[in-house]
Image 1 (cartoon, rainbow over the protein chains, first blue to last red):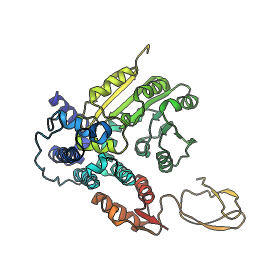
Image 2: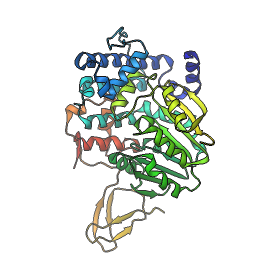
Image 3: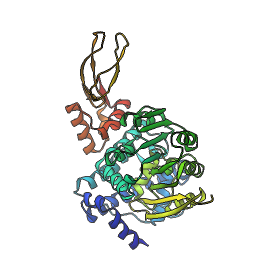
Length: 322
Length: 93
């Protein structure tokens, strides 16, 4: 299974690997993510104990992903420590390591005990979305799933509008509809996309809504035949009630509409998964968990590109008769 | 032709400049002159909180300093610049 995944990564994510300086450089960067994850977990476990897993999603993401890799035992004790890796020399690979270094300065225990400066977390999240490696990751994803083939796009939880902006760089969709439950994100996305919250400017419509179910009627009014695609890049874990919202999204899709999912999972890079969890995620998923949830929400798999490395990528469609 | 609606801060009249986003001096149909700064321009910005700024990845610190010096924000850096201002790390007058 692991060999097949590695072949698929080389097949589908070559532009990203090349930009990061090749497989060797990328592996060095990924090892840093593991190294930091173990460091952070050890600090949290020594200070707050295993109970931190129940109360904090950052600690939970670390625990699950490190358990999976055999770094920690069921009781939370560290069983083995990765060696401190060599620093990559490629600029993009180095940016990835730098993000971990910056997050480390916040203090893992502070993050796990919700004592960290929220503004600084938001700044680091924006930083990540603006970093070169992340832009290449995002662009590779959009090209891989063939975003140019979709005219009407729905993006649940549009966040800061970076995905929409990247889509606009590749092609001009007929209509792009996005929403977010965070008002600051709605304002940021509207600013970046030169749109106005609560309506449409040109081909871009942005709304402030708590869940996907709250915008379904708006979407149906805007696009009576349904949207061509719902785009969820690192969004599933931001949804407040994923199964319910995915069902609502299905009702907004056209008869041939697709749901495209790109999602970091616990099998992906552990430090990055934990950081992003701390930056506002509501859930932590395994790749199998993602698929079970999509099936439970009335979807069927059309094509799976990658299971977990660098993250889960697949195209789904509503199951007939559901 | 670009249509860029503006509202005169003096008399409140709305008018189209007929130009794309820009920074500069504009005169409304009633003759009031005022300065417009587009959303991609930053003027007189400085790093106010160096301790927190130092927590950003070094490559991003360099990018922010470049933006402040040049006065122009690339589209894909607008959100970060706004977050930095909201957090009080960067201030612009």
